[in-house]
Amino acid sequence: MSREPASSIPLLKSKIQKSPVPVHIGVIMDGNGRWAKKQGLNRNEGHRKGAQVIDGLLETASDLGVRVISLYAFSTENWKRPATEISALFNLLDEFILSKLEKMKANSIRLKVSGNLKKIPKNSRQLVENAIIETEKNKKIVLNFCINYGSMDELERAVTLVIQRRVEKISAKKNPWDNSAIKNILKKVDYKEIHSALDTHDIPDVDLLIRTSGEMRLSNFMLLQSAYAELYFTDTLWPDFSDIHLMQAIEEFQKRNRKFGGIDE
Ligand code: IPE
Ligand code: IPE
Ligand code: MG
Image (tube, rainbow, N blue to C red; front, side, top):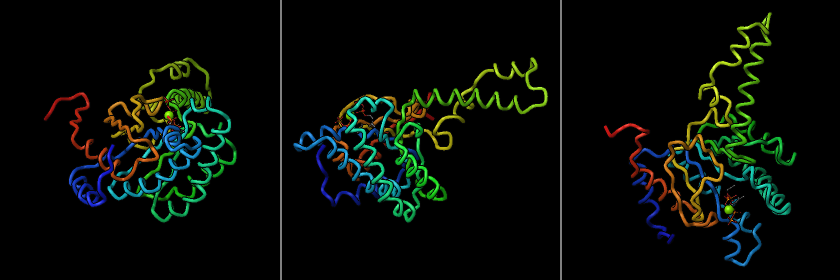
């Protein structure tokens, strides 16, 4: 995708601001490795450059009134990569949290996480958990980092939690295990109950899902939460993705006709 002249940025911004912007944008940040290869660099340099673009994009999204941005940083399948690349990715995560925490506080950015933190390096987990607490009162925008995230894993953990919650509710009673208790355990599970156990239980569903680098797949990202998301695929590699690209994606989103299974008014 060609770069727009800088002068067109304010124009595009004011155009976008005339219509509702997506509340929740999900981003599959892909193409770091290919970007590095094109420059004759090591893959990890691509990840480093990729991490550097996050800051500016967050600021633009926040400015435009986006309320949640979910960034796919590490998938449950990314453990298949070489150990050196995995450790470089977690080092970058640590660096990002350490260097951006003060800015997140100053700009009212609230950090949340989707994914299973139990399995990530202890140091990264502590940094992330601390930043979640330190930013929990921030209200402007949520940065939902998806770390060791995969929709299938999230669903497995959610269903397990639903069962645990049902059992705990019954165990708290005086005469726990009578026939009605068994009936309660086996009653129909509705989506609301599953939703309450998802990592994203307290954030709205994805409105706009962006994937960079030309791949047209979801790679286990927010499959349920994106049930009605507008999909936007771009050939731009993640380290080249800038404000203008984000605004172009939002502009495209604003042209879509969302019907959610209904018909036009
Ligand atoms: C995305 O870039 C970053 C992560 C998956 C962590 P890739 O590393 O997948 O880049 P490509 O797809 O090899 O270009
Ligand atoms: C998806 O990208 C995961 C992240 C961006 C973190 P991948 O590069 O891992 O996805 P595949 O392997 O091309 O599907
Ligand atoms: Mg990739």
